[in-house]
Length: 127
Image 1: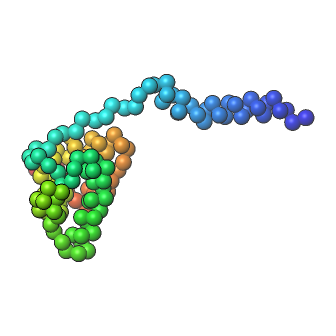
Image 2: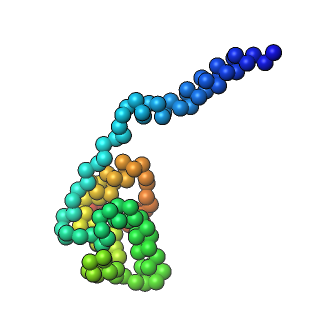
């Protein structure tokens, strides 16, 4: 009366097509290779521990932006007690001068498009 056989076959075909990306990824066995990031050109420590920096650098940069722009504060005390200027261009790129080999490589891997460089300038692009 309702062609139950055709409905069931349609549902199965839909589920197979809808879940194809999952099956394809499982059959592939691995995700894309994790990018090798360029090591810091100078300094042994970042402003936070490495694992914390990997997980929360975006929060730190947002905090820095608020502190510099709204409160006029310019310096940050790192976890090791060193005072650094809250500046992506001077502090971050001071240790990681190759934006392409550090920032962009990881952001491309994670498929994120941060808006940091909408306002900030990479000095290397003007050399």
